[in-house]
Length: 279
Image 1: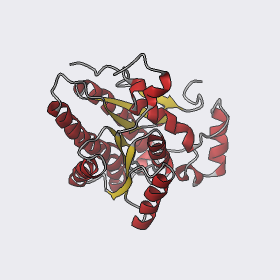
Image 2: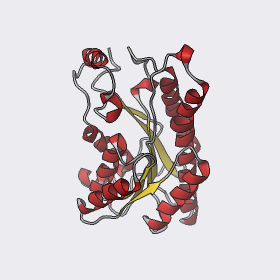
Image 3: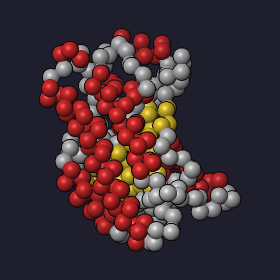
Image 4: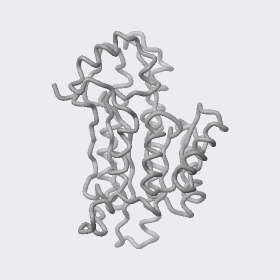
């Protein structure tokens, strides 16, 4: 097993982050973290596909169109895809490689996820299963479909040719600690599973792809604005940085992991939390 080397490590450092000519797919890319990740990848030069489920088709297409226009007409396309359905995920990944990448795919961000806050003793069976179906199973179906494309490309180029594909999971600091005061055992467990899945796949698939995680802390998204004000005050008191993270502050980390700038990085969990996990 050989991890693909950097193609030109002596080149000026900013060139290491260049994604021109690459094709990227971001699941759950129409809002929140996923939307900013897609923007960042596009701004770095990649052609980008974004998936959605609950967003209206017209809205998703406008998001893609606006992103393309803001980046010189670079190819951006939206696809409806329910990550719970393995066949749908596989079909979408193959369509993105063909329609956006002209037969190639280089970067996949398994970002789609859900959260819920229910006391563990009262957790309904259907809700618990849904949490894992989206956050773990859906991420795995995405990874599996990406791996099939990445391995096929690697073999087509000759197995001696390094292939620098990148898979990135959006996990959470909830994989590392237990958030309070909210009760979210199912969410925490699903994200912990995702981090270890990432580590396992990074070893198993090292020949033809890198696999890493980003674990955000408290991010200023719709997912947090619905929570009680007293919860938010408690969080601020526990975060050394004393503020929430704006979603665009995350996009640089994803560009780093998607690019040759992180060529020797695989199996890592990048925690971005304003110091929340440190005390």
